[in-house]
Length: 244
Image 1: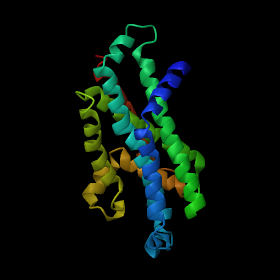
Image 2 (image 1 turned 120 degrees about the horizontal axis):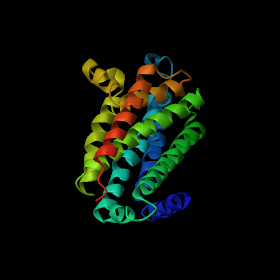
Image 3 (image 1 turned 135 degrees about the vertical axis):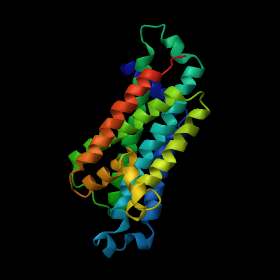
Image 4 (image 1 turned 180 degrees about the horizontal axis):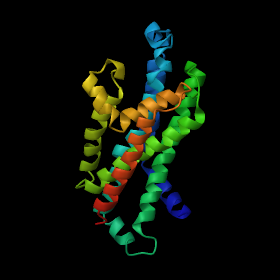
């Protein structure tokens, strides 16, 4: 298994566009938006906190994870199926499941590196506090990432070809980001949009990151929504996935 992960990592790095995009874009947005003077001023409407201390850091973590999970991972797996890699591996003792696991491990590793940079540089450059409840933050990151990669595997299972896979991922990603408060704070969204977002995995992921970053415990409903997404998306992906 280790050799498979190492081999996939080398292939991963030969075309570093996706991983670099997933790391640099959220980091550039955090540092760029965080340098805007208005975002660094205490806002009474936010309880005296700065904008960069509330929603922005968690959303950049989300952006990094979903970029890998919903566009990068499905494109690679569907490409492997199109080129016959999965079919050929199914005839060997290695089996294609290990290749899927290696792909997920490499994608998660990129998301972990991106999150570490966001947390570290956000603290050093912008003075954003470190997560106040680090264990809960780590747990939410794992569960939320698992829900996103579960959706990514489901996209890989149903996408007809490698060109369609990232398109399907983007069609899913942008509405979920909107409902999670990527462009407009969730507090300003219509009630119906917030209620819909509460039962989709990305908004609970974002709110749970925000809660644990502030030192609070995540809300049980948000954990349940993410856990159910992992189970449902994982089960559907396993049932619908085609090796050839």
